[in-house]
Image (cartoon, rainbow, N blue to C red; front, top):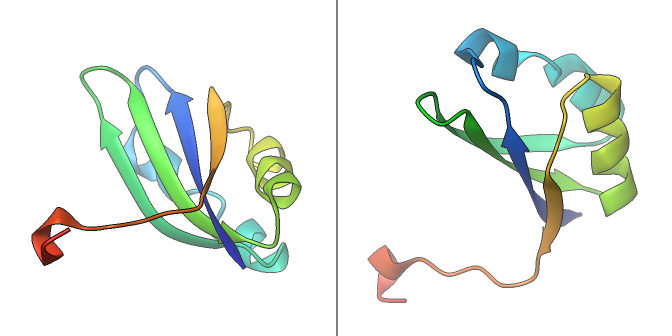
Length: 83
């Protein structure tokens, strides 16, 4: 499975809104790894593992989650690990 990042503009979002879609994710062979959000700006970043970009986008559409951009993660590093 590949890793993807979704960037979203969701003014007024709540934690409960972001928690929706878990059951649909499992049914579509998609795993939500992390969700980061800033309520003051309405910006959300979702990190998922999915078979492909199209599956991730289909899931977002199914749960009515608008997105600004979807990007595949080809490289990952942590500065905490000495980067």
